[in-house]
Structure formats: C-alpha cells, structure tokens
Length: 163
Image 1 (cartoon, rainbow, N blue to C red):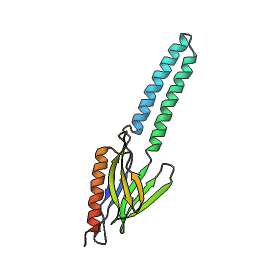
Image 2 (image 1 turned 60 degrees about the vertical axis):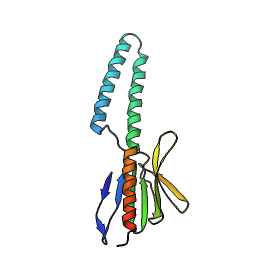
Image 3 (image 1 turned 135 degrees about the horizontal axis):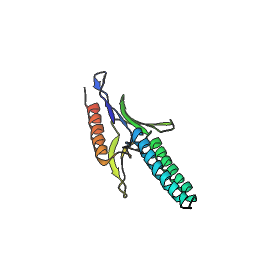
Image 4 (image 1 turned 30 degrees about the horizontal axis):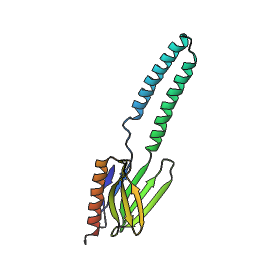
C-alpha cells in the first residue's frame, strides 16, 4: 500500500494504491522450484532403477503443477486497486493483470464506505452511493482493511470540511 500526500490547491491529496501481497519473492520461488525439482528427479530415478519407470513422469507432472500454481498466483498478484479523491469525487480504479482498467466514481459528499464480511469469513470494503455499490480490498487482511477504512473516512471528512 502506498499513499500520496501532496497538496493540490491548498487541499491534501488522497491517493492510495492497494495490491495483493505474495510472501515468496522471485528468488525464493526459484530456490523452491530447484529443491522440488531435485527431490522429484531423485525420487523418479530411484523408482526408475527399481523398475517403476512411469513414476518418473508423474513426478515430473507434480513439479509442473507446482510451477503452474505459482505462476497463476503471481499473475493474480498483478491486480491493483487505487482509491483517490479527485475534485469532489472518490474514485476507485481497478487494474487487472491483463491490463484492463475499470473505474467507479462516487460523490465524496454522498459515498458510504463500509467494511463487510461474508458468512465464510471473507471480507471487503464497499463503496456505495445513489443505488450503486462496488467492493474493493478483498485481498487485504482484516487489519489492513480496517486501516484503509479509517484513512478513507478521515480523507472524506477532511475534504468535506469548509476551507
């Protein structure tokens, strides 16, 4: 998460970028893949020498499946959500990993920002105004969502105060 604090026309600017977190970096990923590959190849050779040669292929498929799972996980981490105050609107811009961008604009004076949680424990923030509602920050932890909720509410409060 990053936040901009520049001032524009005497007002503090609110700009927050949210992104999913991945705990295993690229270097760690390649180390993990090297270890998994070495174990799979070693076990496969042992099975091949014992006469069970098809096991080598299946262990290779296991390594490929692990690689693909991480590949898709890292690709999904390319999602970005940006909350910003532009003029008198709260704007949510969502950029998907493929490059597609969606934008929602809500009047700052009328937008409701709430934290919601489903029955299965998954949470999100919702922005609602004039019959429209959009969810965001679903990939963040509950603590991070609470911080963002408080910060967005403070920014909206500051924006609506007379100068």
